[in-house]
Amino acid sequence: MELNKNNQSKNRGRKTASSVLLAGLILCTLVIVIFSYATSNHIISNATAQNTPAKKVLIVTTSHNILGKTGYPTGVWLPEMTHPFSALQNAGFNLTVASVNGGNVPIDPYSIPSNPQGTNRDDPITDKFLHTPADVAIINHTVPVSTINPKEYSAVVFPGGNGATYDFPWDKNVNRIAAAIYEEGGIVAAVCHGPAALLNATLSNGQYLIKGMKVTGFSNEEEAITEILIGKKHVVPFFLENELPKHGAIYEKVYVHEPLVVVSGNGRLITGQNPESATNVGEKVVEILKGGQAT
Image (cartoon, rainbow, N blue to C red; front, side, top):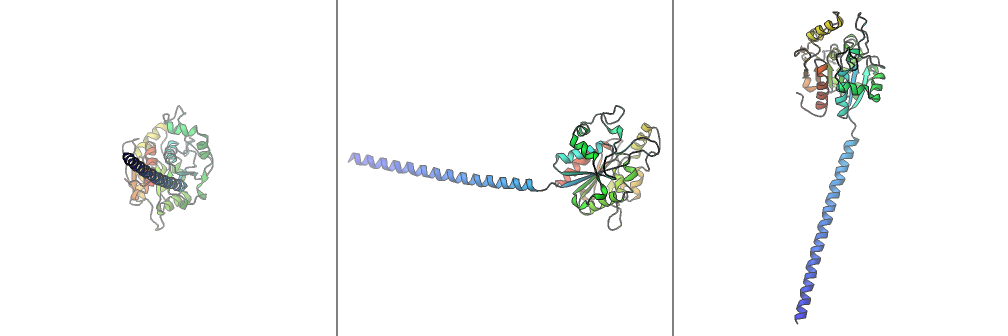
């Protein structure tokens, strides 16, 4: 009789152990299923994000290479191109570099870091650009602005350099691209002398793009310092501080060679005063393209 009770007790123990084991297996299976589902969804989400085309950004430089009648070489002030380029490239945007005429971009020699007589000797961003063959190839083989379809781009950046004052304002394709990208809801940005590209950019209603907009650009005081360094006056066709207001803009500035970025048009018009503002302009374009606040 005692033996029978012991057997019954053992059977109940075996059934309890089996039930616990079965419950554990069911729980394990459920965890694996849930984890697999979550992982699968995560992979699909990442794949979808990776398959989303990066926004395209256009950078347009001058093609003018001689400073008026001085005989001095000029062109783009290189860090005004390389700093926004670096910020946008690091953010993963798809970049196109164009110039007024296409082909090789003229570079102001005083903006090259290795030039001992230049004023841009401590610039690791530009130095890295010049030591990256793929990047150098881009500025040696730029696209002519006449071939650009502005509807393909979410933003355009106009770097400066004295050369920009000679060709930007009067090039119909520069004007067309700036106005079209702005009217399509994109961002138009310019640095230092780059706002020369905005002077004659005209919207479809016949109004200047910059009318009523707060903007900045190379100041009269900064122009005066440049004239002293060159040893000649009236080396550029006009001063932006004087010309921008003539087309309805509200000009702003800070002390010479202090960075200033002015954002107007609900975040779609971004201007920088001088070379020192180039990085900030690039970063502001990145921020707004990624959905940041237009402040």
